[in-house]
Image 1: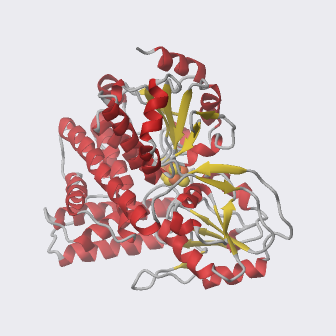
Image 2: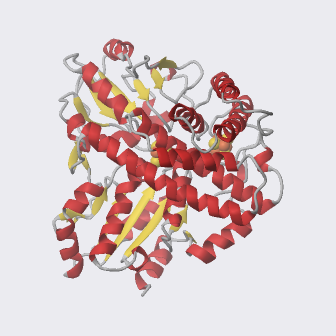
Image 3: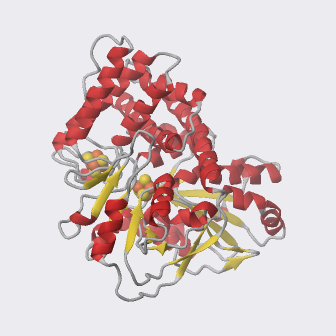
Length: 514
Ligand code: SF4
Ligand code: SF4
């Protein structure tokens, strides 16, 4: 096997014997085959792909993300379904040979990999929007065309242009997802989320799929079973249509890489709606349920019916059997819900605070978390930000600092949680609104993006930021193994991309920049 798509890749270069994530060589081979079939289907789909074809492409791309699917048989069956769809479209010939993407001249392989991994992230966001009933024909065409583009030899310049085009197309997909979330669950508003664990049975829900949470809340109403969010589900508490359910009690746990410790001994079942799933340990494997794209061989699954409805009664029964907490475990609170719409509706107050000198600089410290000790950088960075600066955050990287008391700045807390990685659109809108208000470009704002990356949604968001011409982004904890020296040099020269150093050094450089 060969896989180097995520930040924890073996020896910083590639997983070859088995995945650090737990992906087996069999699953890696099946997912490579699936990727080849997806490219072939995109080629057969032509310039006007049917919505169902793009549904198949997006779900298939999502399935190959890090920490989503560990089941070789499922990837094989999905590849067969994709092949069937290609045949039905009259697609001729064979799919490209699996892994041929990763062979050849170094910079070209790097660019092809960047394009593929960005497309995997875009496919994931497109899937999230589609399960909430939203598709965008133009974005669908761009996704399909970019995937088909990988089916032929391409010059490095053309690959780089296509990478930026995927970043730009992803902005439209993120906008679609943002609209879908608000249409289904209301406009998110600032909310305090309890970390107290109440007495009684409960279900913990993880991943990013708010539609699954909505269905779970409908079905647990009046059942006596509480619901807590885990990981990237934390921002769900900001949505009025989710928050209104009294059994949605609060939040348990931190970022994905801590789940094996946090679930050990948990007296309730856990539902994984999307990434980031780790191989369950034997001590809690019988309490893990998966749904949607996410799976692990042997873990119980909840499948959707033809209308997309899911029956969570098995989890409710299991929660009652396990009994939950026998007494209350008190905890504090964290805040969330400072997404794009909430901040833009308070834009006047933010602009006044900047003009009056109350907010000197904005940092967006966000992205994925992960296991490496070097990620302590982000906690230290946030701790060291001066009191006249605001820290925006999103993604699961926030769990490294979201319980810190940073105080407040003007009418706002200094630490503003904008939501999931899925909510990157809101963050971009805030940056554009500030640039509009100050009559300058985003690069001239007192705003610095300090990103932590782990998987392919983050890769795609980075491409979106680059496509918008945003410069001086700091990125860590290490650089993607799939960026060759030549490609990295281009990104550094054109976009002033900075690998993180130390919080002290980076903060000094950022705050002294004219
Ligand atoms: S997803 Fe990451 S950890 Fe898993 S096999 Fe690929 S590079 Fe390795
Ligand atoms: S932000 Fe990235 S690493 Fe974190 S849970 Fe979401 S997809 Fe996984």
